[in-house]
Length: 78
Image (cartoon, rainbow, N blue to C red; front, side):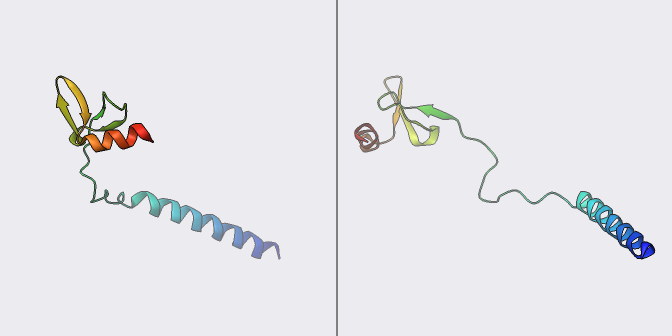
């Protein structure tokens, strides 16, 4: 009985070691294809105070605003 138990323990250790070594040799998963990898700068709307991506904002009289006034009004009333 002792030999069977010892063999079973050694088999489990060998399996775990093999899995560990196999996991390290795998290449990392590919990056998400939907993302460009570039983080976009966030800006704060001077009117409603919401932070939004720079591409969704506009500059007027030196202030950063939401692209459309309707966006600001919805956020101010919420």
